[in-house]
Amino acid sequence: MLTLGKRNGSFWPKAISDLLGSDNWPEFDNRFYDWDQKFEIPSVNIKETEKEFQIEVAAPGFEKKDFKIESSEGVLTIQAEKEIKKEEDKEEIKRQEFSYASIKRSFSLPENAESDKIEAKYENGILMLEIPKLKQVVTPAKKEIKVG
Image (cartoon, rainbow, N blue to C red; front, side, top):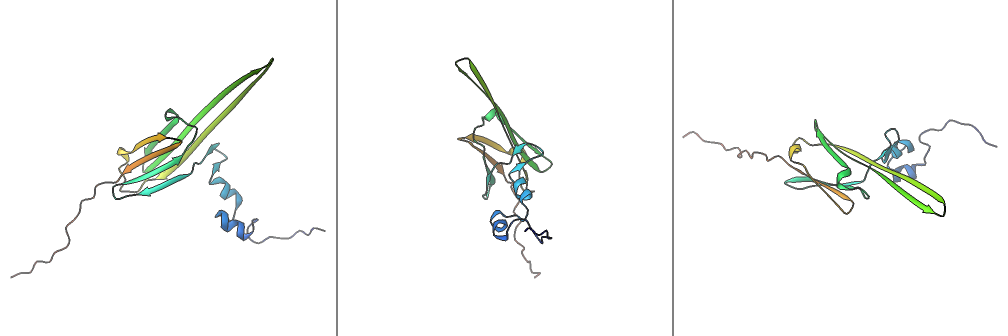
């Protein structure tokens, strides 16, 4: 016999929510796919060096022309769309398949990023972005001058 009762906390057991990084499955799910916008959120690697930020976006199956990269008001947005059409003929049976892929990811740029000098290349399914840092003026160290 089932008993109806009020649950405290998440639907998911604590071990699963700890592993997935979320107490709420829809919240976790939306990190990888935006159901309202119908695009996937790609995985990224972000690195920082003294001179630049580097972003690698996993985007297999696309071509250079499929990408649209914009920087506006401190936000970098990367998106790509591709429609694939495939037709097959087999003994009077015609089959047509459509495939559509769309990705989108946005990043808040730090204040020291030179957004007008971002460079991008696409190789082997990885979109690589290099975002130079602003050259900061080094102020000389504070020096006390004694009055003689």
